[in-house]
Image (cartoon, rainbow, N blue to C red):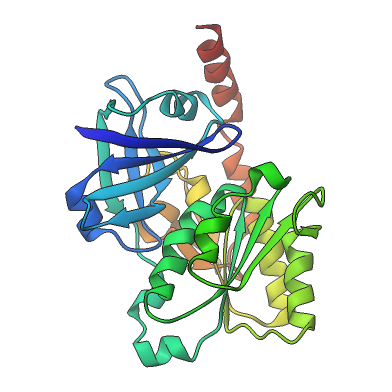
Length: 281
């Protein structure tokens, strides 16, 4: 079993945990995810890897309390052990296969919406360690939900904040800020967007108009994380793909987001019922 070593509240109902997992920490790469099982009666929960430290033998995960299982996770404390902690799973980000010379010639923009800042962080960290300083937009509802800003600023000077209510940084959507940065003369060879499905849809529509290649991570649609349940089926370029075994990253200009968003709502009723029972207890 894997032990929780640290626990930190990042925002309301959002916590980060470092977990003792030396083998996974050695093998993990940006863009991958893992499966967490809180206890012997818990379900499989796919979570993207937020950070990994091979020297310390630790993995960092970030959880937002949305349903019954995620609420159970954030109630766990330092010293508690997960029943299951399996990974790394999924394909790593494509840019890790580029040479130093190729990386040095590319300008990356990362758009992190809400909890999407967590899986964006290891990607920006990996690039920073290789001398690349990408641009990062962190989007949130309000200032209190902006996470990982300080951590990103340690990696790159090009960090931009957008909040829906204007309480921090740019007042408006991440798409509007992205367009504003391009209008100011910033040129991006690739945009990588991770966050709520609807955000990734509109970022992809914006970048298609701007003719910027775009990658999105469909981790939010995963349920079982093994390809067996079929819940993460998504149409990409007219073909059915499975986010957990063939992704989680895909070409954002080829993803059928409307279908993906409908699929993401499939278990809302069951999740609401489970959350209600959890609260009653």
